[in-house]
Length: 156
Image 1: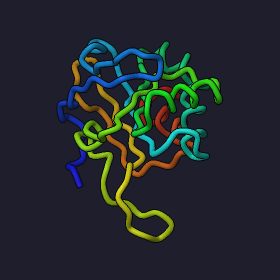
Image 2: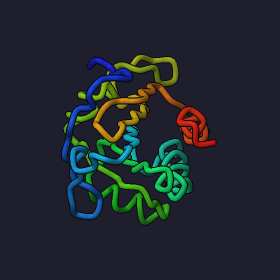
Image 3: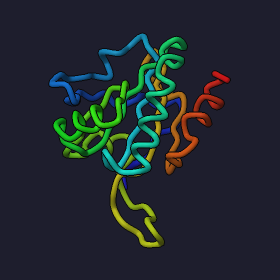
Image 4: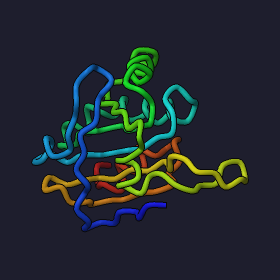
């Protein structure tokens, strides 16, 4: 398992393809606060709940200066279907080789239905305007996560 990030760490830079044929780099968002969240698979119940929750809160998060990047190992084509099917308004990025997930400590051993498996660890990392980690949350729950994150960030 890769090392997890902690507040004060420099967030690893990355450039990933999005679901609309472009690319997004963390360094290209310098000067803005960025919520980077990792989820296992598009169009699954928990991941849909979480993505819809972020989409429902995107206007408020933008007003507070936050960008939201959802990262999964799904292909850009699958992410495009996910966006269309659920009317998502957040940026969806594809990390098919899981390199970014590994750099962020969001891939490794986890418990799933009582068994230890290797996979995506549902995680959220908040990066400040200078590229420094301000919050690093691992093994988060899909339901209610955005509300908890808003409280943690002092937005409520």
